[in-house]
Image 1 (cartoon, rainbow, N blue to C red):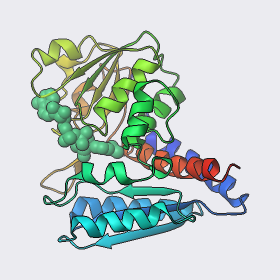
Image 2 (cartoon, rainbow, N blue to C red; image 1 turned 90 degrees about the vertical axis):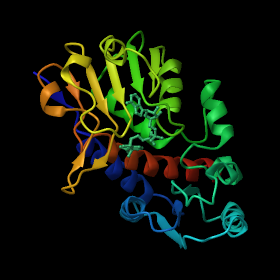
Image 3 (tube, rainbow, N blue to C red; image 1 turned 180 degrees about the vertical axis):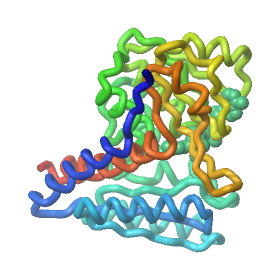
Length: 281
Ligand code: NAD
């Protein structure tokens, strides 16, 4: 029987824990989210982040900037937030409008306020297996979920499909740091099915609905579906053909209710930890 990994329930548990710990603090953690432009998916994600931060008892601010914001204006805002002592976490919502290059901004965020863990200092610390100020939220959420379900990471064959800087690459490094044997596959990978079928833990982060089918999954494997795609009927879908796999996989994350809520829980955990760290509490 396939076990469903309930990211929603675990996320709620984590969010409640943080809320209780925050209520005991004299000062409130502060999260600032910067949204540039009108990307509809980003607007929903930002609203959810704002709500969860408020529910946790944080100071939660969203800066909604227009689509044609110029580079200097955004740099000035980041500088202002870096110097604001009430701000613990700064999140620049991606993607940015085409005329702005995210890497012109991500390395301007103070690494100690880099709540998404995308600053080169934090990426470098993960690479060196040192403690970063913050671990990227989606990979962190996946590790928390694997640990909750007591999935053996050390020695496991892990195949990650997708090599983005926000999911695939940091996750590969974090799992390597936990002594897994990690293969990263991508759009140019040959024989993807054969490679995927070797996995004890298969993670898919491509954004292609139903791409992972039964023939790609080893019996009993743990299948983590990172993909979020809204189909033509407005329904949320993942990368994994859930129904075809559910008798084969040992564990599987649903979409929605799997990795998505864990990403939010990690963001709230990161904001709280950065507050504790900066205030030496
Ligand atoms: P991206 O769009 O930057 O990159 C996609 C990756 O998939 C690339 O590395 C590409 O090489 C690979 N890929 C594409 N087609 C492939 C194919 N046919 N075979 C093998 N590899 C292929 O990726 P991203 O930003 O990491 O997002 C991926 C998906 O995960 C999207 O659906 C996104 O919405 C979702 N996502 C979800 C969360 C969450 O919290 N659940 C967080 C981040 C991203």
